[in-house]
Image 1 (cartoon, helix red, strand yellow):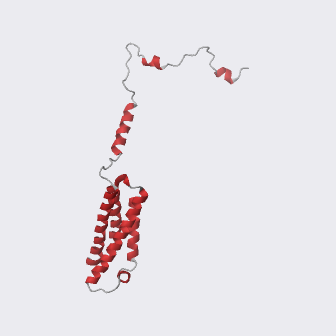
Image 2 (cartoon, rainbow, N blue to C red):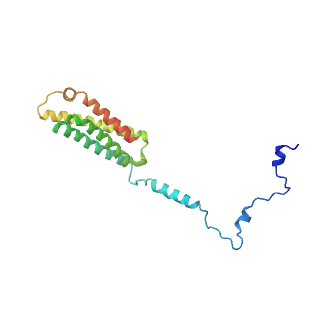
Length: 182
């Protein structure tokens, strides 16, 4: 009794050969062919979509520009801390200002430096600038209090008036800068 393989195997001695590139490229008379295969339109659409989503690098971006812009934003953030905490006496809003300072410094650094800074260096510079800005703002609060008749040293004044809010400002500002600059 013949097995399964024998019944299924093609018994023709010369099977029809597969078409070659030469035989396919020569069209027969009356045959119409497309200039490009239909799938080329998808490749073109994918290429144009990829080109549209690829950001154009800023030719003016540099490390120095990024640090300079981030420094300006940090100084503005320090001034905002003095304004909100000292002049307006909105002490509960200081956390928001510290977070906004971290956000502004990180975004300014990211935009100003472009691809010239590695992620690690960008995060380090953003966090350090934010902490320095918040420290400068705290010293500004102390100086403002001295103009109103305060006589305590800076750390005692900040601990007495703002308490645990000062370390929280440093934490919030640093975390926001770290998250945005990554």
